[in-house]
Image (cartoon, rainbow, N blue to C red; front, top):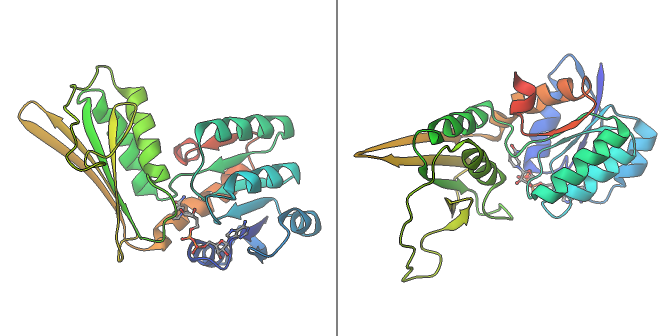
Length: 243
Ligand SMILES: NC(=O)c1ccc[n+]([C@@H]2O[C@H](COP(=O)([O-])OP(=O)(O)OC[C@H]3O[C@@H](n4cnc5c(N)ncnc54)[C@H](O)[C@@H]3O)[C@@H](O)[C@H]2O)c1
């Protein structure tokens, strides 16, 4: 059995993760910790194979370092990582020969949405991303939005049209990453939604994903716990563990 510790276990995602791990025969939940607990000391005493982290954007990077340095494999759902941090953590995982995952989105449908968007961007370079989350989400844009823009930029074979971005109200045209506009909506009642909106010659294409409940992320979390123990390097994006 794979021994799993959940960090952020009192939170909305942490509670779902605890349930999902308890319901999987191959996983053994050895501990549930949260804000006031000492992550490094808990790993030393409970010796989990994997630590699942759903905490806060301000702590995800440090927590991942602590997990790797303490000899466990991180499965990180916490958002807010920038590219330089991911690179540093990949290097640390190589040094420690520990597998791990940072997943901007654990839902299988959202991973497929990003893959399909990258495929479409080869033929339709003009695209905008509209993502919606609950008002409790700390940062904007979402990690999924950022990752989608990165994947689109890497897949494009031609440049998008140059648009006029004259804004009568500041922010009206959204943010820009690699020539992909990112628009963030924060509303009660929303869990996580994203539309990738392409435009071509007299045609449009929308690829849309909707997480209606936080349990939609759990098959991805369970899969990741099982896969990272077979790996010796940290990867960014669930798609690297799905195939
Ligand atoms: N990757 C995904 O698929 C996915 C999906 C949904 C949410 N998220 C992300 O997961 C994170 C948690 O989301 P949530 O909705 O559960 O938030 P939440 O606020 O409901 O829960 C966070 C929990 O983490 C605890 N916490 C905060 N800082 C901590 C620290 N340094 N150490 C230990 N515990 C700490 C809090 O006390 C709380 O119990 C956010 O970053 C969110 O954006 C990721």
